[in-house]
Length: 266
Length: 298
Image (cartoon, rainbow over all chains, first blue to last red; front, side):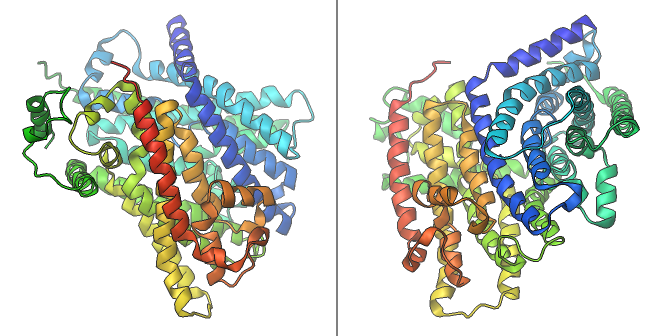
């Protein structure tokens, strides 16, 4: 356990090293926040209360999306590039030889990464968004811890999905294609482009049931106070359920994949 | 290919590479032509290397197609709730979208790897490019040329096609000419931003995301009508970073719509001039950046 805490801490510091990159990222998130915010204002002007949100709730949703984009890795990014590269080059054989669990190791490092991105790339855009627009910030102080628990579960779900994809590199050799398609699904089905409440009919129902809704839609609704009491428990159960199922699937694939590893020497 | 380049370098000797043209087997050519030829060669090399993993290539083409398609799907989903956004119909927005997405896609295909300059400065591999007898800009632009970006252009053209078929435009010869002019000048304006952004990375080595906010952010902005943005933002993308000339101003002429922030009608014909001016400035920035470059020595 201590080991994994150290791994997470190391990942946090590693990302904290890139200060200019973080500043550049904050700038980008803020620019996109403004562009999307204006499109939402136009949309909610035409249809107030769309999707059960008023305009300021919709704007809050926009800035939450920008704040969580990197932490929940909605477009992918983070450990999976490194892991697939290690699988492709065969360095993975060394990792498997180490007395640590592959999946837990990368989970710990991804949690460290997410924690940094939440602070480094989440706080400032959210603050600037709140300065420029009228946002619906939580009324109750308890909403904040409830929100962070939901974000944590979202990060675990996001990790579990990306780990599964990275494992596919054992068969595909080059994981880039599969990763791209999953990052795409993440972008669309997390609700990053448009809240999933606005997706019509069956598409909406499917989108809300998929694991990616744990990355933004659920945490945002917790933040906006749409899940309270038993509703909050249900939301957590939904995220936690997906986390468990996907982590187990990743574990199965990892076991199958490691049997395929042939150490070539040289 | 890579092999032969390395050998040439060794023969030339690193320090005197530029001063010793007789060491190279290539005939002398004008610099621009040389750059284009080098771009083509490097591009062909990357295309061949991409084709080594065909399944992955197919998936990435589809991915690039779909990631941009989702932008338009988002607009479609918005229009499942409203009839007009900022006073514009879906077909009109499709025209703005199609022009901006196609122009950006074209530029992204040709110059999309420019944002890797920062990484090359950091890890020292830019030095390798400097000693080759080929314009650095051509090498950087063709670096990791990604044919998969055709997916983005295809998507833009499809939406543009949809707009042209469904819109009821009173076509004049001038309006017809406007279409290819918009796409080509638009791609050039985006290209100048890519080059200027890359030049900026000589100074701020890991700030490639700043560039993204002007390129990717720019194309997202242009996909929506100017009426929904604040007047200051519209002035900013007209007079400071002239993105409005990519699609808004010429497309509004085609649509017979009012121009934002009280601009006169003739600004719709400026995009080629704006593109040339942008490339002039970007070229100066690139040269300044390259001259200021100090190797990390790693």
